[in-house]
Image 1: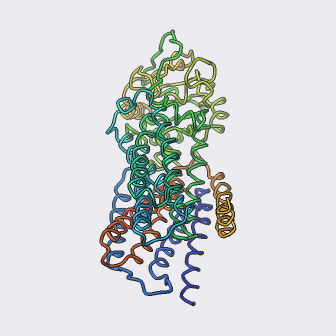
Image 2 (image 1 turned 90 degrees about the vertical axis):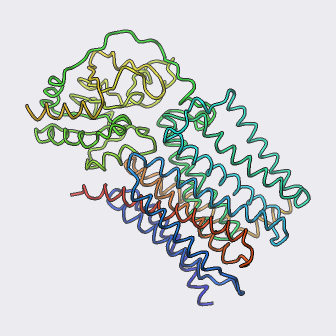
Image 3 (image 1 turned 90 degrees about the horizontal axis):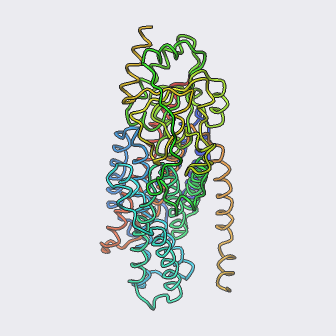
Length: 467
Length: 103
């Protein structure tokens, strides 16, 4: 009795650790503590699950458990310590996929035991098993495939089949029908049907991620995160564990909220992202924009920046790819020393997962109060002297505001053209991820600075130094 | 339908728990600023490692000669634990960067 009491208290404290931890994560000052609370919550729950009594003698198999826990911890720890901040989306995807895979394993064992008669499961219980297989399976293969996409191991265009959205719909309907059939038939149709259900779920995970790419990646990663949580919650119902349900649902909720935020940031519905696949396929240039492109010399750019009142830097993924955050920060330091007010305007989908750019800048020691979100940035831009754009494109495209024919029309963008002058740093005149023309480059207040972001920023930095 | 009513009534507490956790989850997370979206995501990702609890219970209950289930459970624990341990460590690494600039 006492033991059960202690165990259940551990699980309760573990759940509170999760909730309180997530709450502390909402402020940069307390976030680290919050993560530790959540981690302690998990540790308590793991200890509790190791010693919880079952009311009868059980085999325990502690040797198996300990070895597995050790292997998992070591692999997890080392990959987490070694990963580069630019690769954070890949890391989160992989972890997500593993969580999903674990849920699949749990569901699979229940299927095996149901059919060999060692476990009695009612219809609703078996529905939960199927949901665990479906959500966990999609989270598993979807995340691994998303990882492959982020690593550029697969080409977005090559994996998108003609009529891909129709194929996905057919698969989804097929899963629902097959699932219903399995539930109605019960043990009568045998284990193969459940295996088929799992296999289709796994294929569906790949197929649903396949056509989504490029700028839509943050949405997919958030959604898969939500799925891995929900699969954990479903498995929690199987194991009658309130703790797993609480943890899983919290993750499901956070993933869902982030998904919605990312969709809003692009002015698209979740349905549109999942069905449309605009990242790779419908990349048509809008109206061909005429006009001339004006270049600016490094020296002029340096002078302009150095003697202005306020400068807003708009970093895009190009900056991260070039690993140029640190030089960016050096320029910031020099300008700030001369009394220039330097801020950073961060679009919600800058980078390849929600908030990715903030992490990259934090890594370069940029203090977070300097990072402005979309609304703050847009009001600051209107009074800024210079907006300097480093490796961003679609998120500063005025076509989103004034060209109803553009594929990104209606997407909230950073209105850099309201600043007194604009410097665009860019590798070439190529269009961005979405393949859309950007009239900003031809804007009367825009001047271009061509070259590799790191290279150009480095030269700019030495120009400013010599002033 | 009778089945459904019975299920609902039998599991009333867990249904309450589900409903309140969903609301609580939305409430807590809606307030997280953009700056912290990535750590929030990797942190919550680590929490989805709760599946490891299920895997541990599964292995503890499995007959010591049932190698198929043992192996599956063993793999499950490894997978879940990578997710949980890796997730918390990587989140801490990120948040450390946010912390040290605070003066």
